[in-house]
Amino acid sequence: MSVGIEESHERQPVEYGEAYAVPLHRISTLPPGYDEHDHSHHSSDHHDDAPPRFDEVPSLESLPLAGIPGDRSWLAKFGLVIASEDPLTVEVTPNKDKDQSLLYDLGPIHEAALRNDYALLKPLEISFACTHIDERSSEQKTALHYACQNGCFETVKALIASGANVNSLSLRRATPLSLASSAGYLEIVQYLLSQNAKLHIPDAGNPLCAAIAAKHETVALYLLEYGHLVNTRDSEANTPLHHAIRNGMLPLANMLLDKGANVNAPNQEFLRPLHIAASKGFRDMVARLVDVGADVNAPQNGVEWFTPLHYAVQGGHKETVALLLENKANVNAKTAWKKFGYSHPKCEGEIWGSTPLHLAATGGFPEIARLLLDAGASINERRWDMQTPLVVAVERRFHSVARLLLLRKAKTEIVAMERRAAIHVAVENGDLDMLQLLLDFKADVNAKMMRTYTPLHVAAEKGDLEITKMLLKNGVKINYAGEEGETATDIAEAGGYGELKEFLINNGGKGGNYHKSFKRSVHYGWKSPEWAKYAHVKK
Image 1 (cartoon, rainbow, N blue to C red):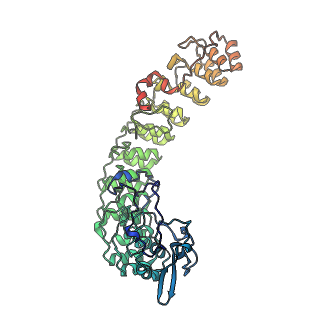
Image 2: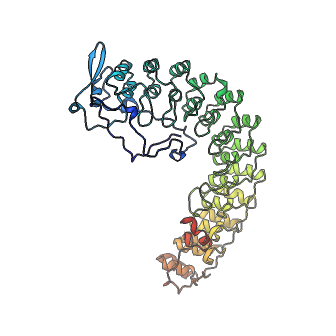
Image 3: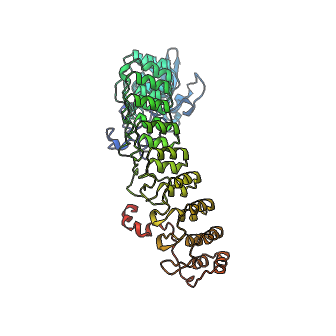
């Protein structure tokens, strides 16, 4: 990924109007104490569905005074003016003619390159030593970097003819070749290689990786003629095979495999090509990778410990799941938590300690859940928050998954955090159909959770009359008391649910403790006794 400069360090304006202006390449443009070898400057943000960014180069349209082709009035902002057209010469104007309100990161030679105005390069270089062919911007880019990514071929040729360094590295460690590859300019790529551009500089955008990540197949196919690039890596340790599969360029991925691509190479996030293929649901590519030796149970070490099977299940890719199971994927492998050992039980998308069956329940994939169960998945396995796949399915209101699990003898009495059983979760959600389903499979209508609350207490907390009626119809004890003696009637009265209170009283409910201030039973978070020992994690 790209290396950034802290924005608090602003570039000071360069007075080009001075007769003896200091050349830009002598001006320090980096923050004090900056060490380009210090990896703390690197960004670690990554998204599987988007190719990594390479060196960002301004476009012509982003520049002030873009003007029209052939218009050189933009030189005025640098304190420069055309003195003669034949021969073309540039001279410095007095400071008063320079636009003092503008601050520029690029020098005049960089902007000339972006405008493909190659005729200006030599005049600028010889004009009072105010610039030179390899002058660097604050990101240590030369004019050749800008010309390559913006497709200014004539300028590229003129710069190289004038002695520009074809292998110069920017601050973000990008070469002109990697930028041209990522932008898809085959003609420039071919020319750079003919001018001895090196392919093995450890840069941020390995040319082949850069071309494939940006989906420039023509450039990639040309670079593939250099067979020794097949297993090269970019700055995030991705190989060309990682990028080809991620972008769905499967014929190219097959070509890489034919040329000996390493199928078990992990990137810096420990993702292997098989993880990516499984997450995308590319069944045929998964089959090819397995056939040539990919480890079907390779964990994503150090991050979430996802195996390819976890990714396939999470994406809902049934055929890929079936293929992985046929090839002995571990059906009960567990994930890990990405950043912390524990997190709050109400966090969305919790996956720590999940088996593939948990992920099938999380995504609501009954057919995949059936495949996993047929392959021997542990139906009552708990994840980090003690939830079984059944509790997960109930919590997310996936009735078809819950029914399948119940038909396969999932236990309804197993409790999770705060001793919540599946029936408590259904009541909390106000899900009548799920509650009826659980009761049909003999769930305990009087199951006790934290504070010894029954499902009726939870219904009273929510003020849910319909759920209360269903619970009473199925034999819930109407006057069961909580830790402080509170009944469901007390809770309904304390919550201001008058209709529910009257209904409970009419059906034999008793109160008397309504004056007490009750803590909510469900999810009072870090006050929970079961979470007290993890208080340091919150801090």
